[in-house]
Image 1 (cartoon, rainbow, N blue to C red):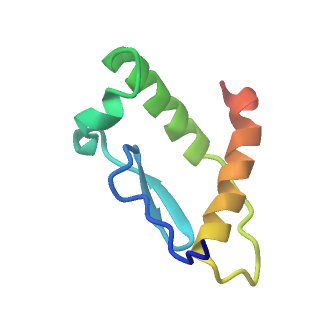
Image 2: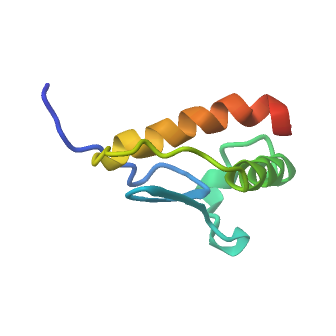
Length: 87
């Protein structure tokens, strides 16, 4: 298969994805299907708070990269590496 399109439509997420940007949805925008990914709502809100801390950090966006997926992936990898530092 040689697909060139990736869709996150329908996947539960607390993030808003933009070309060259990742933002956290407001608590009031969180859908029940995202909360249901966790043991309970309290655990979901702990994950939300962690995501908020992660997004408050500075990240390096690859210069010259035009592909939004590669841009977001680079930042998500940096976020993953910072988990232990802020948790």
